[in-house]
Figure: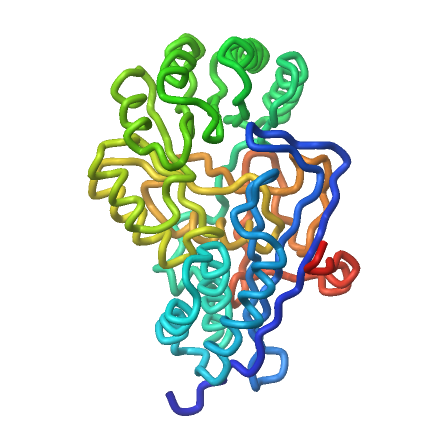
Length: 377
């Protein structure tokens, strides 16, 4: 494409943020979040595309920090250098050919390419996604990790008092203790606040059915990922035997995975993450779910502002998402630290969608430098 800026360098910037408290799910606990900021630099001074590669979830990340950095430096960079900025599809295909798997890394590449393309032509990413339907996106409160029931209830009550309309809690210990957690949280938040429950792969199907049936009286909006990610038939069994919607997250890394969930009638809802599926993958999966009569739920627990903005841009342009979205932050670990200067959350229960070209993210490069982590950590 004549006259188009060209990608000249690709950089991976590891970032480490430590929170004030530990956050626990059934798979592990952490007070440290790590990500990699991807920078696509061009031959035009100041023109670059950015995205965040999230190393998630806590305890058992699917892609480790050193793997992400290595993949970007050894495979992504050689695939992208020399490609014109506006040839986004060609760039995505080049990375797909060069790098097997690594869905979180490839999602960030796609998102950075969108940011770069939109900046190059002077429009918001929303224009490339079809245009905004929303100027601000409803979001749940900070996710409540596994604690004693009383502590979880106290956090939930504080969120209800702050004005959030939905809350998500983590479970995944024993059936009896998890029933206590759900009961305590429902009592604390009252009858009108929506309650979402996530077991993070913890149970076998029989126990997942017992737990889900027991908590139905507390009217959770759905039960998320009650069985292991490989047990799609077990999830289908749970769905057939409970009275509330069942959602999968970990079973769906690709559009092909989503198709298997649909074919096997394994879930009522599917978690879609721009951080895991990229803009293109998220659009395909949402369209598939809509065609099958299933509901996408957007978002991720831990992500800094760069990833959160990408999620919000997608949410603002996509009809049919379950609201509010689950766009994350560092709040579950007790910190407001971030790598963008945008005021993304001016009021409880909403995330602002930035204006400006590209994602509209104002990256705080000095803070990012101070938070830089060595890939070996």
